[in-house]
Image (tube, rainbow, N blue to C red; front, top):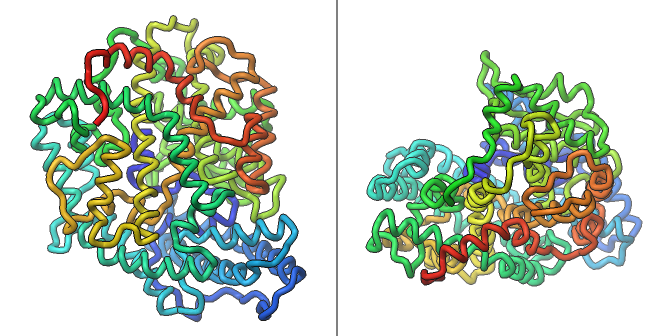
Length: 621
């Protein structure tokens, strides 16, 4: 996962209303509040007693308006990231403003049909229209809409600049480098505390943002903004929260075993006075600014033995370059029965960093139209980028599957965790078996190297799970009023200790605003999707491996070249967002319930090894 969730960049651009109102709005900071002169052409007014026919007509016209603007929004965003200039940023900002105005109008109009007995598709599309605004402004209150837009811009600007109220400036990249590379506890502590000097100024703005967005959510028929976010999962808000905790309960024993071993090794290195073997781990020692993934300290905890496969060396030896790596990833999908990507993918994508201009190198997958798909990367010939390309093309093939079968409002993943999960599912199939089949290696190594591989993977994917859960847990409590402004920081650390077993390395107070040190809080990006993706990818992988007839450990399975697995995958992808995600999941797995036992199956050899290491240790916190 490395830097995947550290600084938000749009990971993929899917052709759905979510992309217009959520993804595109976050790609570029909106610098100006909406003005009356920028409003799109209004839809016909909804009368005071709307009918079923009114609802049908409204949905039809809304889909047309979104379709009319989508290519313009997509290309504005593409140019802003691949030709960075004052002019391209201006065009993107203007497009973002127009999309936000349209989103506010459509959401508030859709809310006027609440309570009507409507056909399934009309009701589902109206619900999607209401839910796709991450931060809804109150209806018919332009001053508050402008204030909300201004706060959003200020918060993202504060994070991006790294500047404190008194003018000091901190470089997140340099501080993160210290956290990831140093083993000096004092240097680590200074880097950790320095970054958290930027966020206290965000607190009053965030408090006001919560007040305004809660009003907007209530105007759309929700109790508060957290209730609105949780309503986006085809179950009641309370049911979704309970489902997240249920799934977490399934994987918690594996996380606790990993936590116990890592804490013991850290205590051995730094001493029990720094890392107490019966307490939460100090957050600055885990190799990541937010202690959300621990891969950077892998050498400290690695099992002995097992050299593994040097994929980077094999790619170099076989003279792979950016294009041939991407062709090979496309070949993975065509081996499953998917049609090749269109020729325009190869002529319009960004595969390498241009020499003549500034670009955003962060990997992303785009659907500009139903026939125009692109990938944006600055590819290096190494193992990480080889996996990333397979992941990104997972987004592209998902996009094309639903774009060609679904109307505009259904062009998206079954829920926001599915898109990331599909990309990661494909990456899980980059195993020795796959590497042998494509000629990168001559023979599969024996299983002696598997434990180090599983530990390295767990240090990212398993370590992330409780963090992926608690970020929105904190926001839901803030949105509902359970955590008031005088409890923001205390509530944050209570949740981090409860779920992660991680604590602040120094005393924190309500003068601090440590949640704001994580981009997704000032950036207002929902986070539950990442937890869902980290669970679903293993559930998808296990089911596809069963279909492919795989025998042996789950972590050694690759579905490459298996048409039966491809057919099952394609059937789910083509559903888009047309049905509840539980039905999409059942299409793939035969069950409509998330099941994290697939995570346990994948890491079973590691869990056995961890339990052996932890025999004489006191685990838990």
